[in-house]
Length: 242
Image 1 (cartoon, rainbow, N blue to C red):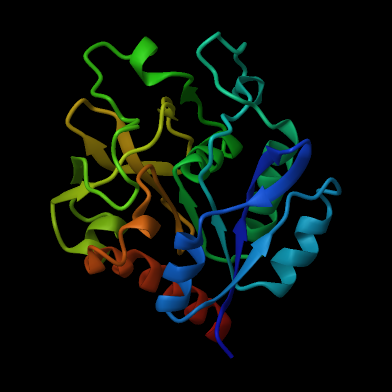
Image 2 (cartoon, rainbow, N blue to C red; image 1 turned 90 degrees about the horizontal axis):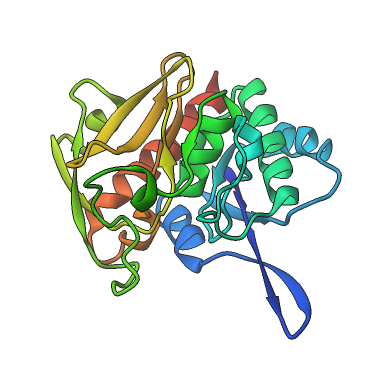
């Protein structure tokens, strides 16, 4: 049986109705990599995360337009913070903790990378352009998600380096927040030219990786990005065997 991968969703309000949503890039990339994607709605009972962690093989914490509440890392929200969804924060924090405790592989994408760092005790830049001097524009509104934008430098010896086998990787970029203080037990595995952390990974868990880019949107046009998802699926298969 193929590994079953849970993918978190964001919310959208259309015509006074609230929907759970996600781009189809995620499920397409997991399908291409040999996994079976299952979309996870935002649930109010965060204790249900334990049941999902017991039944699913891996977790992708997705991106989205909702900023993490700065109160989660001990700060007061500035005027630069975008839409906050505390229900999503609580749900994804619970999912992360339960999947980690179960020893299941976790991949955080964009906001998902930030969720991992905050959940582990790290902090974020609430808004890069306002808080980091000479920071390049990391949110490219004029670009499509499937287009490349800037380079990142991958740390030799990191899990990300082992996956892509390169020191420089050109990615897309759609984030106004990023890791500030990295959580204990984690290390940065990639940076942009302006010094912003572009990827993190656990120093102890077999596969807990966060990336600021959206590689799921690049797997069709730039097939080498599928390596990340295949490595993730491979980690879930190894966890099953062990």
